[in-house]
Image (cartoon, rainbow, N blue to C red; front, side, top):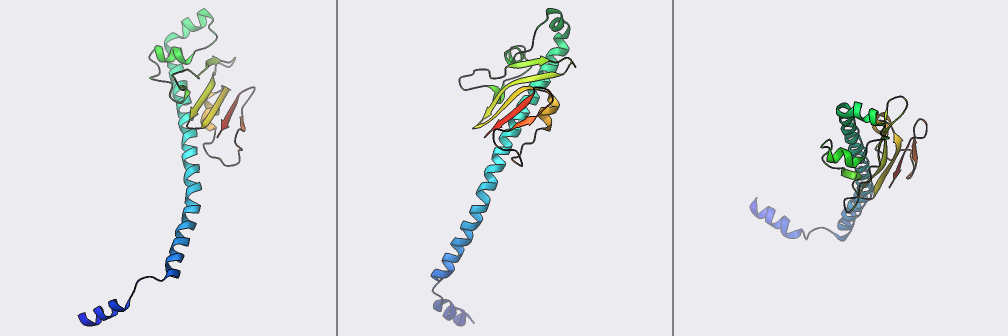
Length: 168
């Protein structure tokens, strides 16, 4: 039996050129399908990270108001800045709202007539930029991460003057 197998294996020279080309074509097709899908997943995660930073800033602003609400309304302040949240210990850092060189791109929070916090600022993560213009916490939460029907640079509708613009 051993001699039979050795004889058979000695006759086999390996794969033919056609077989090798077929394998390479199959691998190329799989790569052509997988690479765009993976890049979309990465982009969507960057949008999600920026949204998460905005929601963390909302939580910090709510804590700020809980502790300083009376003083805030008594002094007639117009809003809360990102710098106030960081220096007051309500937010560790600005995350995607921190520009290169440490500049603050979180313009801040204002309160509308309904008592809702409204965020304004620009979050940037690896080429994906979200611009928040007087958006509520619910509007930020409900914004999709994906690139489904919205075009790059499209504004996500919000009530009144609020918009969230995503630029990829």
